[in-house]
Length: 340
Image 1 (cartoon, rainbow, N blue to C red):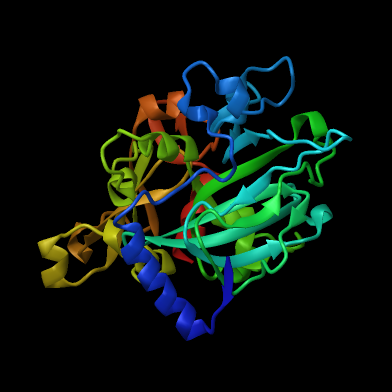
Image 2: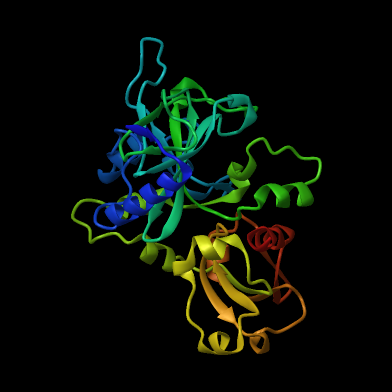
């Protein structure tokens, strides 16, 4: 069910949504396929990259190209087909929220036709993404509020990749993301001159994913109450850096992730110590006073969890040179985007 809201009314509605979601399971399955909850039926839920590949290639993480390619969502198998074998599964909003972006031109993205929704849970903004759709449901457009379970599209296999997705692999690619920076378009123009950005802020490079499988499994009936804030705070740290920046949009959007530091409260905040997971999701921010910041650079690497890097190396955010660790160009770019 969809409703047209003014900007002010939409903000008010999302505040109500935040209260409602705190009292119930925040995220629901985006299709009628719930085989994830049935042991041994993973292949009935996840779609692998090909018939001779394991179902794990349809999961989240460093699961492709021998562990060196990141897959930032989960690929959920279709259950319903028409006489031509085309999928007809309705794709559903995972939670109450608002439509932020709809791409109706499949040729403009690896995602094909896709939708981005915004959800406010425990004062944290989470953005769900639904890709490879064959159709967008009537009435789904940016600026509209949406209820959990509402039909927003139809599963398909649209994309602009050179290796097309066949109907036998039809699926919805489902993501749960944080938004890195409101100023992404300006950052993109400055740092990637000559490259096209057809999707503005809703470019996939500005959306860093959390594992939807972990979230959905944590919400399995009989499990203890799921907390998104607890889930984010408990992410495994890949590395920790300090940044000499104090005014970037992520701090406002994810304020509950900011920790207390009495010295910075007293002396003033000159920067932040930031922990990120292996996919570049920042999940802890410790304010630092000027006296606590070492070195002259804007971004300083403090530590690396070597075991986590060895287990999940595909984002290539850090690298070891001899006995020393350093941020790669990709790592520096990730923190540059965050603090732009």
